[in-house]
Image (spheres, rainbow, N blue to C red):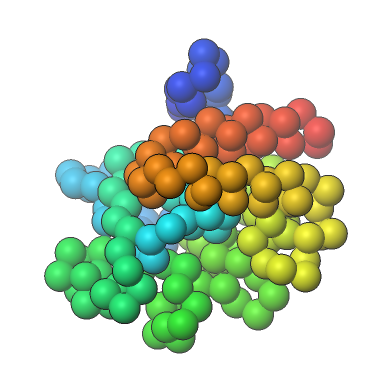
Length: 181
């Protein structure tokens, strides 16, 4: 059992956290032996999916992951220089962690890292509805999440600051959904 502090005054026990980490494509040996943070890169001006994905990665894949936000036209070159995993850049079909058909990048990460937890599957629908125009009705919480994400974008704070300020929202939404099951 892993205790995780989410920064809003509560320690939450996630029985599945270790199981999720060990079932990732990195494999249990590599996950346990990793000595440095994984690096991830995406387009700047994060809103829904580009905040939800870092939250998912930090909470379920690599708690020390580093995130970089760059202009879209510099994404692939900078990813190569940094050795970073690119995600959520639909203009580039060579990027594996991307929207897939009607599904968002959050769902692609769940799929590729074999994360089957029901609460995260439900959260994925909310993220999809918030992120993809025309899918707002897939989950009743989607329009609220979209409004929050776009509101943070309008404040003009950096992408890193958006992650810092929005992660507690995803933590709270995750807890809310856990209690609904």
